[in-house]
Image (tube, each protein chain N blue to C red):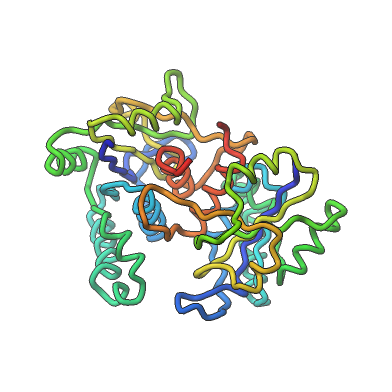
Length: 186
Length: 186
């Protein structure tokens, strides 16, 4: 089975007006997505921000639960956060993955917007089950990944659809559903 | 298709030592689960707490996004929060549902712990697609629903499993995955 990595990008992402912005790292994104990553066997979850102060804050949150007071208070958080890494940008993520597994990953972008040629969930699920290449799933905060990031992806996953027209899931919920569709017990 | 309701209980739930406690209502639970509920067509999402001050706080959060400043700032939040209701306990939820649809719902408990006779996701999905009876999905905060609540449920849904032994998803992620497994496009 292919090694899978997940990255949550805080830049470059879009705001609601389509402008490129840098969003703040939030504590709850780290915790929730780390737990989902642990549940579904993601090898490493990268929190990606160019803001040095937010990388330091993220490191502090992780340290609290990994080795600080939190590590004795809640062992399941510790286990989940053990797979979180912090990087300044996508290039740094790619370098880290290449160092870990010896090759560059196939980059899979996610988006709530439909696009021609998007890969269906069932197809990616099958591909991951059979592939030897590592894969990197990219998630955007704010209103989604900027076009420059989408352009670097080898694949673009189809959007999540429910039975309604509403498609504004939180990134935490979207991450959980995407991993369940790709790796959940069927 | 059966009307589906969702309730997030803050009491009676378990803490990590198995004691019955009342947890705090969190802003992010309301937002995330309301968005998932909107995506998957849940008719109403109940935030349930016996603490009057937390019910007032929840109402304030909802009001901010429904009619206050937030309603013009972010319309997708407004749309999601329109289906949130606040109740003091499970009995009040049942009364509200009966008033809305004219009958008591089938109560479906969720839990991260396996149990004999639990209903598989595929079976509940099929049942919901065909049933006329309203259904109420119960989610617990903290370390899950107390035994007294589980005992009142007509059905208990099987736990979510990924390919690992780790099963400590956040309640926000669990809600998203449960709704996707029951209503997601396949």
